Length: 55
Image 1: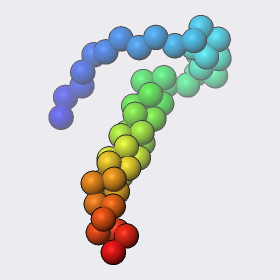
Image 2 (image 1 turned 90 degrees about the vertical axis):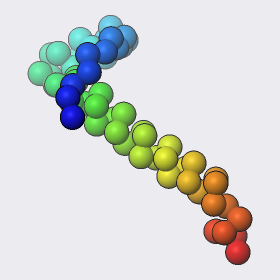
Image 3 (image 1 turned 180 degrees about the horizontal axis):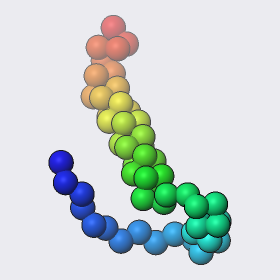
């Protein structure tokens, strides 16, 4: 799968700190989004299947 170019706005102090620590903001943001999507998919699945879970 290819890469998609997106714009992301961060708090200036957060960006400054990340740069000063030579952190890869792209990788960090991507990882955080992957984790958030996983949690949300799991939450939605549980909501959709609540009746079966309760049984």
